[in-house]
Amino acid sequence: MSRTDIDNLNRPHPEERPEGASRRIGPPPSFETGALRPPQDEGGERSQPQKKREKRDVHGWIVLDKPVGMTSTHAVAVVKRLFAAKRAGHAGTLDPLASGCLPIALGEATKTVPFVMDGRKIYLFTVRWGEERDTDDAEGRVVATSEDRPTEKAIRALLPQFTGTIEQVPPRFSAVKVEGERAYDLARDGETVELASRPVDIHRLDLTSVPDADHALFEAECGKGTYVRALARDMGRALGCRGHVSALRRATVGPFPEKLMIPLEQLEALCHRAAIGEGNLADALLPVETALDDIPALAVSRADAARLQRGQAVLLRGRDAPIFRGTVHVTASGQLIALAEVDRGEIVPKRVFNLAGILGSASLRKGI
Image 1 (spheres, rainbow, N blue to C red):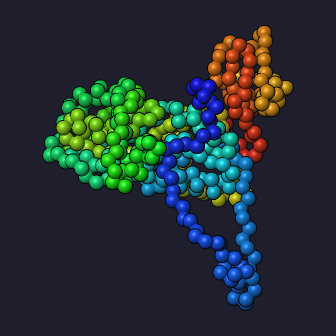
Image 2 (image 1 turned 60 degrees about the vertical axis):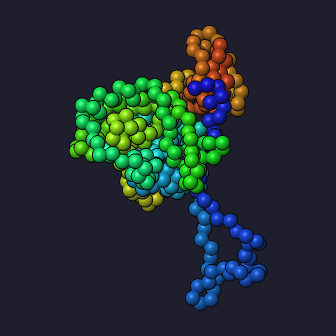
Image 3 (image 1 turned 135 degrees about the vertical axis):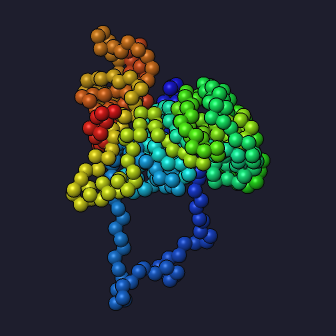
Protein backbone atom coordinates (compact mmCIF):
# COMPACT_ATOMS: atom_id res chain seq x y z
CA MET A 1 0.00 0.00 0.00
CA SER A 2 1.42 3.40 -0.98
CA ARG A 3 2.11 6.34 1.30
CA THR A 4 -0.92 8.12 -0.24
CA ASP A 5 -3.14 5.19 0.71
CA ILE A 6 -1.90 5.32 4.30
CA ASP A 7 -2.56 9.05 4.48
CA ASN A 8 -6.16 8.45 3.36
CA LEU A 9 -7.07 5.67 5.79
CA ASN A 10 -9.94 7.59 7.35
CA ARG A 11 -11.84 8.28 4.14
CA PRO A 12 -15.32 6.77 4.19
CA HIS A 13 -16.05 3.82 1.96
CA PRO A 14 -17.38 5.22 -1.35
CA GLU A 15 -19.37 2.26 -2.63
CA GLU A 16 -22.34 2.23 -0.21
CA ARG A 17 -25.58 3.55 -1.62
CA PRO A 18 -26.66 6.86 -0.10
CA GLU A 19 -29.89 6.87 1.81
CA GLY A 20 -32.48 9.58 1.34
CA ALA A 21 -33.25 12.09 4.02
CA SER A 22 -36.34 14.17 4.52
CA ARG A 23 -36.10 17.94 4.66
CA ARG A 24 -38.24 20.26 6.76
CA ILE A 25 -39.54 23.40 5.06
CA GLY A 26 -39.90 26.47 7.26
CA PRO A 27 -39.16 26.93 10.97
CA PRO A 28 -39.27 23.86 13.24
CA PRO A 29 -42.26 23.48 15.57
CA SER A 30 -41.79 24.70 19.12
CA PHE A 31 -43.49 24.34 22.48
CA GLU A 32 -44.15 28.09 22.50
CA THR A 33 -46.23 28.05 19.31
CA GLY A 34 -48.12 24.96 20.38
CA ALA A 35 -47.18 23.15 17.18
CA LEU A 36 -45.51 20.45 19.23
CA ARG A 37 -46.41 19.73 22.85
CA PRO A 38 -44.44 17.64 25.31
CA PRO A 39 -46.01 14.20 25.94
CA GLN A 40 -48.44 13.85 28.84
CA ASP A 41 -49.69 10.83 30.74
CA GLU A 42 -53.38 10.04 31.27
CA GLY A 43 -53.60 12.29 34.32
CA GLY A 44 -52.45 15.28 32.37
CA GLU A 45 -48.96 15.31 33.90
CA ARG A 46 -45.96 15.76 31.66
CA SER A 47 -43.95 12.56 31.28
CA GLN A 48 -40.18 12.62 31.59
CA PRO A 49 -38.26 12.51 28.30
CA GLN A 50 -36.52 9.21 27.58
CA LYS A 51 -32.83 9.25 28.42
CA LYS A 52 -30.58 8.98 25.38
CA ARG A 53 -28.42 5.85 25.36
CA GLU A 54 -24.81 6.68 26.12
CA LYS A 55 -22.25 5.78 23.45
CA ARG A 56 -19.17 3.76 24.35
CA ASP A 57 -15.60 3.33 23.14
CA VAL A 58 -15.63 -0.10 21.49
CA HIS A 59 -12.68 -1.21 19.36
CA GLY A 60 -12.50 -4.32 17.20
CA TRP A 61 -14.05 -6.27 14.36
CA ILE A 62 -17.37 -8.07 14.00
CA VAL A 63 -17.48 -10.54 11.11
CA LEU A 64 -21.20 -10.54 10.47
CA ASP A 65 -22.93 -13.28 8.52
CA LYS A 66 -25.21 -10.83 6.74
CA PRO A 67 -28.64 -12.22 5.88
CA VAL A 68 -30.26 -11.85 2.46
CA GLY A 69 -32.45 -8.75 2.22
CA MET A 70 -30.39 -6.47 4.47
CA THR A 71 -28.27 -3.62 3.11
CA SER A 72 -24.70 -3.19 4.30
CA THR A 73 -25.59 0.23 5.71
CA HIS A 74 -28.44 -1.22 7.76
CA ALA A 75 -26.20 -4.02 9.03
CA VAL A 76 -23.61 -1.52 10.25
CA ALA A 77 -26.34 0.53 11.97
CA VAL A 78 -27.69 -2.56 13.76
CA VAL A 79 -24.26 -3.62 15.03
CA LYS A 80 -23.40 -0.08 16.08
CA ARG A 81 -26.65 0.10 18.07
CA LEU A 82 -26.14 -3.29 19.71
CA PHE A 83 -22.72 -2.25 21.01
CA ALA A 84 -23.70 1.40 21.62
CA ALA A 85 -20.46 2.15 19.76
CA LYS A 86 -19.34 5.67 18.87
CA ARG A 87 -17.99 4.74 15.43
CA ALA A 88 -18.59 1.95 12.95
CA GLY A 89 -18.04 1.14 9.28
CA HIS A 90 -17.76 -1.84 6.95
CA ALA A 91 -14.98 -3.23 4.76
CA GLY A 92 -16.76 -3.69 1.46
CA THR A 93 -20.39 -3.48 0.36
CA LEU A 94 -22.38 -6.68 0.08
CA ASP A 95 -25.54 -6.38 -2.05
CA PRO A 96 -28.92 -6.86 -0.31
CA LEU A 97 -29.56 -10.04 -2.32
CA ALA A 98 -26.21 -11.49 -1.16
CA SER A 99 -25.44 -13.14 2.16
CA GLY A 100 -22.27 -13.87 4.07
CA CYS A 101 -19.09 -12.17 5.22
CA LEU A 102 -19.48 -8.48 6.07
CA PRO A 103 -16.56 -7.32 8.26
CA ILE A 104 -17.71 -4.43 10.45
CA ALA A 105 -15.13 -2.19 12.13
CA LEU A 106 -15.89 -0.55 15.46
CA GLY A 107 -14.00 2.38 16.94
CA GLU A 108 -10.29 2.47 16.15
CA ALA A 109 -10.65 -0.54 13.86
CA THR A 110 -12.13 1.83 11.26
CA LYS A 111 -8.56 3.06 10.67
CA THR A 112 -7.63 -0.38 9.32
CA VAL A 113 -10.54 -0.82 6.89
CA PRO A 114 -8.48 -0.15 3.69
CA PHE A 115 -6.18 -3.08 4.47
CA VAL A 116 -9.16 -5.44 4.61
CA MET A 117 -10.68 -4.04 1.42
CA ASP A 118 -7.42 -4.69 -0.41
CA GLY A 119 -7.54 -8.38 0.53
CA ARG A 120 -8.85 -11.27 -1.54
CA LYS A 121 -12.50 -12.31 -1.43
CA ILE A 122 -14.06 -15.74 -1.93
CA TYR A 123 -17.57 -15.94 -3.37
CA LEU A 124 -19.96 -18.85 -3.82
CA PHE A 125 -22.53 -18.08 -6.50
CA THR A 126 -25.18 -19.61 -8.73
CA VAL A 127 -25.63 -18.59 -12.37
CA ARG A 128 -29.05 -18.95 -13.95
CA TRP A 129 -28.63 -19.53 -17.69
CA GLY A 130 -31.07 -18.34 -20.35
CA GLU A 131 -31.72 -14.81 -19.07
CA GLU A 132 -29.62 -11.66 -18.91
CA ARG A 133 -30.96 -8.90 -16.67
CA ASP A 134 -30.21 -5.19 -16.49
CA THR A 135 -28.85 -5.51 -12.93
CA ASP A 136 -27.04 -8.79 -13.72
CA ASP A 137 -28.82 -10.42 -10.77
CA ALA A 138 -32.29 -11.80 -10.03
CA GLU A 139 -33.63 -8.39 -9.00
CA GLY A 140 -33.46 -6.80 -12.42
CA ARG A 141 -35.50 -6.67 -15.60
CA VAL A 142 -34.92 -9.31 -18.30
CA VAL A 143 -33.15 -7.70 -21.27
CA ALA A 144 -32.11 -10.77 -23.30
CA THR A 145 -33.02 -14.46 -23.42
CA SER A 146 -31.77 -17.66 -25.02
CA GLU A 147 -33.10 -21.19 -25.39
CA ASP A 148 -29.57 -22.61 -25.49
CA ARG A 149 -28.02 -24.21 -22.40
CA PRO A 150 -24.31 -24.91 -21.92
CA THR A 151 -22.92 -28.37 -21.25
CA GLU A 152 -20.70 -28.99 -18.23
CA LYS A 153 -17.81 -29.61 -20.61
CA ALA A 154 -18.36 -26.25 -22.33
CA ILE A 155 -18.47 -24.42 -18.98
CA ARG A 156 -15.24 -26.01 -17.77
CA ALA A 157 -13.52 -25.21 -21.06
CA LEU A 158 -14.47 -21.55 -20.66
CA LEU A 159 -13.11 -21.00 -17.13
CA PRO A 160 -9.47 -20.31 -18.11
CA GLN A 161 -10.63 -17.30 -20.13
CA PHE A 162 -11.96 -15.76 -16.91
CA THR A 163 -8.98 -16.56 -14.70
CA GLY A 164 -6.04 -14.25 -14.06
CA THR A 165 -6.05 -10.53 -14.83
CA ILE A 166 -9.00 -9.84 -17.14
CA GLU A 167 -10.84 -6.80 -18.45
CA GLN A 168 -14.28 -6.39 -16.89
CA VAL A 169 -17.07 -3.87 -17.50
CA PRO A 170 -18.90 -3.20 -14.19
CA PRO A 171 -22.68 -3.68 -14.09
CA ARG A 172 -24.82 -0.69 -15.07
CA PHE A 173 -26.30 -0.83 -11.58
CA SER A 174 -23.05 -0.40 -9.65
CA ALA A 175 -21.38 2.19 -7.46
CA VAL A 176 -18.87 3.18 -10.14
CA LYS A 177 -18.85 6.94 -10.66
CA VAL A 178 -19.68 8.52 -14.03
CA GLU A 179 -18.84 12.25 -14.08
CA GLY A 180 -19.39 12.43 -10.34
CA GLU A 181 -22.64 10.42 -10.30
CA ARG A 182 -23.10 6.82 -9.19
CA ALA A 183 -23.88 4.53 -12.11
CA TYR A 184 -26.87 2.99 -10.32
CA ASP A 185 -28.44 6.42 -9.84
CA LEU A 186 -28.14 7.21 -13.55
CA ALA A 187 -29.46 3.77 -14.52
CA ARG A 188 -32.49 4.17 -12.24
CA ASP A 189 -33.23 7.51 -13.88
CA GLY A 190 -33.37 5.78 -17.24
CA GLU A 191 -30.12 7.19 -18.57
CA THR A 192 -27.88 5.05 -20.76
CA VAL A 193 -24.73 4.31 -18.81
CA GLU A 194 -21.59 3.39 -20.73
CA LEU A 195 -18.93 2.13 -18.35
CA ALA A 196 -15.33 1.55 -19.35
CA SER A 197 -13.71 -1.82 -18.78
CA ARG A 198 -11.02 -2.11 -16.16
CA PRO A 199 -8.55 -4.81 -15.14
CA VAL A 200 -9.54 -7.12 -12.25
CA ASP A 201 -7.80 -10.14 -10.79
CA ILE A 202 -9.57 -13.49 -10.60
CA HIS A 203 -7.15 -15.81 -8.85
CA ARG A 204 -9.36 -18.89 -9.00
CA LEU A 205 -12.67 -19.80 -10.67
CA ASP A 206 -14.08 -23.30 -10.12
CA LEU A 207 -17.27 -24.97 -11.30
CA THR A 208 -18.53 -26.82 -8.22
CA SER A 209 -21.74 -28.42 -9.53
CA VAL A 210 -24.37 -28.41 -12.27
CA PRO A 211 -27.66 -29.30 -10.54
CA ASP A 212 -29.73 -28.92 -13.74
CA ALA A 213 -29.58 -27.47 -17.24
CA ASP A 214 -30.62 -23.99 -16.07
CA HIS A 215 -28.13 -23.56 -13.22
CA ALA A 216 -24.43 -23.86 -12.44
CA LEU A 217 -22.65 -23.28 -9.12
CA PHE A 218 -19.22 -21.64 -8.91
CA GLU A 219 -16.59 -20.62 -6.41
CA ALA A 220 -14.39 -17.63 -7.19
CA GLU A 221 -11.41 -16.09 -5.41
CA CYS A 222 -10.87 -12.57 -6.65
CA GLY A 223 -9.24 -9.25 -5.92
CA LYS A 224 -10.50 -5.78 -5.15
CA GLY A 225 -13.04 -4.29 -7.55
CA THR A 226 -14.27 -7.55 -9.11
CA TYR A 227 -18.00 -7.81 -9.75
CA VAL A 228 -19.33 -11.38 -9.60
CA ARG A 229 -22.52 -10.20 -11.34
CA ALA A 230 -20.45 -9.02 -14.31
CA LEU A 231 -18.57 -12.32 -14.30
CA ALA A 232 -21.84 -14.25 -14.61
CA ARG A 233 -23.08 -11.91 -17.36
CA ASP A 234 -19.88 -12.27 -19.38
CA MET A 235 -19.75 -16.06 -19.05
CA GLY A 236 -23.35 -16.24 -20.29
CA ARG A 237 -22.48 -14.13 -23.31
CA ALA A 238 -19.35 -16.15 -24.08
CA LEU A 239 -21.34 -19.39 -23.91
CA GLY A 240 -24.06 -17.92 -26.13
CA CYS A 241 -26.81 -18.63 -23.62
CA ARG A 242 -26.98 -15.45 -21.50
CA GLY A 243 -26.99 -15.58 -17.71
CA HIS A 244 -27.25 -13.75 -14.39
CA VAL A 245 -26.44 -14.36 -10.72
CA SER A 246 -29.41 -15.93 -8.94
CA ALA A 247 -27.69 -16.51 -5.58
CA LEU A 248 -24.53 -15.06 -4.06
CA ARG A 249 -22.67 -15.66 -0.81
CA ARG A 250 -19.36 -14.15 0.27
CA ALA A 251 -17.34 -16.67 2.26
CA THR A 252 -14.12 -14.76 2.97
CA VAL A 253 -12.84 -11.18 3.02
CA GLY A 254 -9.10 -10.73 3.51
CA PRO A 255 -8.10 -12.07 6.95
CA PHE A 256 -11.71 -12.96 7.88
CA PRO A 257 -12.65 -16.55 6.91
CA GLU A 258 -16.08 -18.09 7.10
CA LYS A 259 -15.38 -19.77 10.46
CA LEU A 260 -15.24 -16.33 12.13
CA MET A 261 -18.68 -15.20 10.93
CA ILE A 262 -21.43 -14.70 13.49
CA PRO A 263 -25.15 -14.64 12.56
CA LEU A 264 -27.10 -11.53 13.52
CA GLU A 265 -29.44 -13.50 15.81
CA GLN A 266 -26.50 -14.92 17.74
CA LEU A 267 -24.91 -11.49 18.06
CA GLU A 268 -28.15 -9.99 19.36
CA ALA A 269 -28.47 -12.79 21.94
CA LEU A 270 -24.89 -12.26 23.11
CA CYS A 271 -25.40 -8.52 23.52
CA HIS A 272 -28.61 -9.17 25.46
CA ARG A 273 -26.80 -11.54 27.83
CA ALA A 274 -24.02 -9.00 28.30
CA ALA A 275 -26.58 -6.33 29.18
CA ILE A 276 -27.88 -8.45 32.07
CA GLY A 277 -24.42 -9.43 33.28
CA GLU A 278 -24.32 -12.95 31.83
CA GLY A 279 -21.73 -12.38 29.11
CA ASN A 280 -18.98 -10.17 27.78
CA LEU A 281 -19.24 -8.02 24.66
CA ALA A 282 -15.55 -8.62 23.95
CA ASP A 283 -16.39 -12.28 23.30
CA ALA A 284 -17.84 -11.31 19.91
CA LEU A 285 -15.08 -8.89 18.94
CA LEU A 286 -11.86 -9.61 17.10
CA PRO A 287 -8.82 -7.42 17.87
CA VAL A 288 -8.20 -4.31 15.78
CA GLU A 289 -4.90 -5.74 14.55
CA THR A 290 -6.65 -8.74 12.94
CA ALA A 291 -6.92 -6.58 9.81
CA LEU A 292 -3.15 -6.13 9.72
CA ASP A 293 -2.06 -9.76 9.31
CA ASP A 294 -0.24 -8.99 6.07
CA ILE A 295 1.50 -5.90 7.48
CA PRO A 296 4.88 -6.47 9.22
CA ALA A 297 4.85 -5.90 12.98
CA LEU A 298 7.51 -3.87 14.75
CA ALA A 299 7.89 -3.92 18.55
CA VAL A 300 9.24 -0.83 20.30
CA SER A 301 9.88 0.24 23.89
CA ARG A 302 7.24 1.97 25.98
CA ALA A 303 9.25 5.20 25.76
CA ASP A 304 9.35 5.07 21.95
CA ALA A 305 5.66 4.12 21.91
CA ALA A 306 4.83 7.26 23.90
CA ARG A 307 6.64 9.41 21.35
CA LEU A 308 4.85 7.75 18.44
CA GLN A 309 1.47 8.27 20.15
CA ARG A 310 2.26 11.98 20.33
CA GLY A 311 2.83 11.95 16.56
CA GLN A 312 6.63 12.17 16.84
CA ALA A 313 9.01 10.14 14.68
CA VAL A 314 11.39 7.67 16.31
CA LEU A 315 14.88 6.81 15.03
CA LEU A 316 16.16 3.32 15.81
CA ARG A 317 19.87 2.54 15.52
CA GLY A 318 22.07 -0.50 15.80
CA ARG A 319 20.57 -3.89 16.61
CA ASP A 320 17.06 -2.43 17.11
CA ALA A 321 16.92 -0.81 13.67
CA PRO A 322 14.42 -2.45 11.26
CA ILE A 323 16.01 -3.94 8.15
CA PHE A 324 13.01 -3.28 5.89
CA ARG A 325 11.19 -0.27 4.48
CA GLY A 326 7.49 0.46 4.08
CA THR A 327 4.34 0.17 6.16
CA VAL A 328 4.42 -1.49 9.58
CA HIS A 329 2.10 -1.78 12.53
CA VAL A 330 3.90 -0.83 15.71
CA THR A 331 3.33 -2.57 19.04
CA ALA A 332 4.58 -2.13 22.58
CA SER A 333 4.13 -4.86 25.21
CA GLY A 334 1.76 -6.61 22.81
CA GLN A 335 -0.54 -3.60 22.36
CA LEU A 336 -1.15 -1.93 18.99
CA ILE A 337 0.29 1.58 18.97
CA ALA A 338 0.34 2.96 15.44
CA LEU A 339 0.51 2.42 11.71
CA ALA A 340 3.78 3.85 10.51
CA GLU A 341 6.21 4.17 7.62
CA VAL A 342 9.79 2.94 8.10
CA ASP A 343 12.72 4.29 6.13
CA ARG A 344 16.39 3.95 7.09
CA GLY A 345 15.60 3.22 10.68
CA GLU A 346 13.18 6.12 11.11
CA ILE A 347 9.62 5.27 12.15
CA VAL A 348 7.11 7.94 11.11
CA PRO A 349 3.59 7.47 12.58
CA LYS A 350 0.71 7.79 10.11
CA ARG A 351 -2.25 6.61 12.22
CA VAL A 352 -2.12 6.42 15.99
CA PHE A 353 -4.47 4.14 17.93
CA ASN A 354 -6.17 5.05 21.21
CA LEU A 355 -7.45 1.71 22.49
CA ALA A 356 -9.12 2.74 25.73
CA GLY A 357 -12.48 1.01 26.21
CA ILE A 358 -13.90 -2.39 25.21
CA LEU A 359 -11.38 -4.34 23.13
CA GLY A 360 -11.62 -7.41 20.93
CA SER A 361 -10.44 -10.71 22.38
CA ALA A 362 -7.42 -12.40 20.81
CA SER A 363 -8.76 -15.75 22.04
CA LEU A 364 -11.33 -15.73 19.22
CA ARG A 365 -8.53 -16.22 16.69
CA LYS A 366 -7.29 -19.51 18.12
CA GLY A 367 -7.56 -22.34 15.66
CA ILE A 368 -7.52 -20.16 12.55
